[in-house]
Amino acid sequence: MEYVLKTQNLQKKYRHFCALSGVDMNVPKGAVYGFVGKNGAGKTTLIRLICGLQDPTDGVYKLYGTMNKDKRIQEARRRMGAVVEVPSLYPDLTARGNLEQQYRMLGLPNFDGIDEILKIIGLENTGKKRARNFSLGMKQRLGIGVALCGNPDFLVLDEPINGLDPQGIIEIRELILKLNREKQITVLISSHILDELSKFATHYGFIDKGKILCEMSAEELEAKCRKCVRLKVTDMKALAKVLDERELDYKIIDEEYCDVYSDPNLTDITLALINEHCELLSADKRDESLESFFIGLTGGGQNA
Ligand code: ATP
Image 1: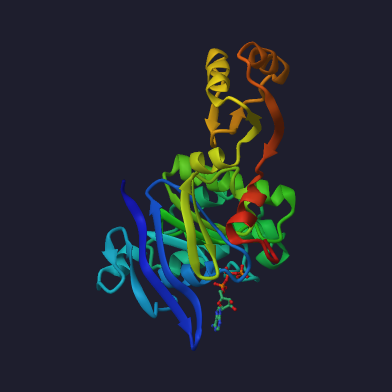
Image 2: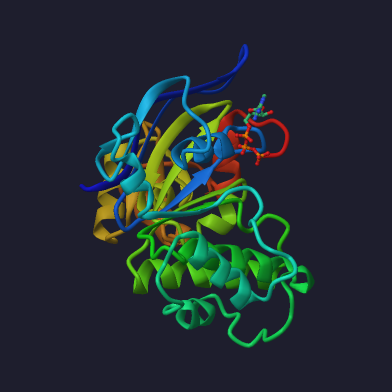
């Protein structure tokens, strides 16, 4: 697999406080990578490091295969656009004015491409309205527009849905999906709202107290959070036979317990088990929701 970003044992200390301790993170090319962690977990710190806004105290990272200590890292970083913390906008300029200013800063020869960016971010009809009068969602989208000016193929967004209303969240989600699917832009998006990220992320990295707890694909997360019924029986072989006959999806936990997916017909299973001389001792519906999975992973606590 090709990776846009790989970090190895990345560390950031502020005096004696370790904001990141030994982070190994892998963002595959083409992914929408949800970087999930509670407030203060270290998400912004990591993003600031890979954007070159701060230096790591230890460890390394590679952007498009280029090591951070390599002189060519600036070239690799030009392929990246980022919105860190709050979008940096000129409040007295219009949406177009902000994009023009960014084009000038990047030294681009003309303003070709601005119309397309305005359209993608859904701000093509904001005319003379100044950025200071935009809603929070519009400001976020304009911030993403500014990050798109250098035509990046890796977009890094730090908590872009924080504080947005439901409509604003949907607009950001659709924008990210459009950029990922139509423009093949790899996206790293940090958030503490796993439920929202789960609607579009393809990969996840979970961070807590400066450490990556685990990385997984969307399929792996879905499998962990699937709804199921946990059956307790006296004869696991008999249960497996009954479930196989019904072509049900299941996972045997141990000699007594088995998780059965896709809303099984319990009456039918119970009757079949009686024929097999097997007793059904209990049946508990389990719904490991995303948030409870996340809380379990981080050991609970505030702001989860
Ligand atoms: P949030 O969503 O609240 O921004 P986060 O996951 O982005 O959370 P960071 O901003 O990366 O968290 O902060 C990680 C930890 O490092 C926090 O405990 C924070 O107080 C601390 N920290 C961040 N910047 C500094 C700094 N310049 N000096 C000292 N401590 C800092």
